[in-house]
Length: 239
Image (cartoon, rainbow, N blue to C red; front, side, top):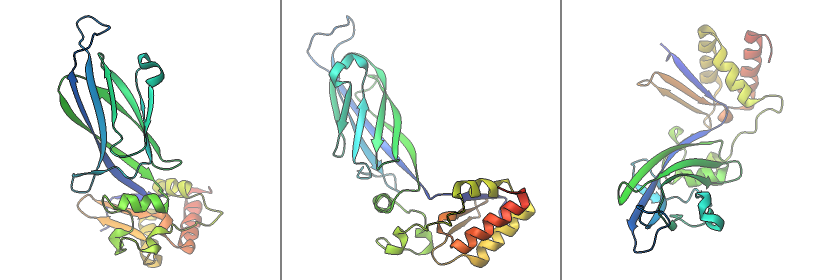
């Protein structure tokens, strides 16, 4: 009996988490706002590995902090080395957008709640990297498995770094969308086609406990991609 839910990934997706550590304390300096003492605060950014442990966030080349406009010329600050510490002084709390730069097309913006309720607090953010390039994929592998590792690929394996180049006539994201639209009987045929024609490089995962079957389309051979493209077109009446 096949799992009831199927996930067809048009591109490899890697989930990771980062942790922000905020520290603050009052300082003996005059404040512009009566009743609100001046404080010195800092924010550091760490990546979490598969065991939830802190490691340097080397997946990012730089981090840009967008402070409150009242900071004037210091309102936008960019740090280029882990833990990307931003250290400032002020009296007010505010929501701070923070942009994490991994590679071109992989910029991610999170919102940090800068507050003075505790002298030290931590916040966790879950992020998704879609179709990371080989160099980034290797850095992501340092913090946990990436698509393909479940099939026995080893760290540093050159074959694991190379993404399949799909048939030029196939829109991979469209193919993933169309496969999700198929009826149950058609999906069963699709899964059988994948089982029959996948290669050692193909990423598939049958998560029985979660009731899910995952396929990374980018790791399938071109002939199978064309078969799935034509099959979904036939069932859905064209692309």
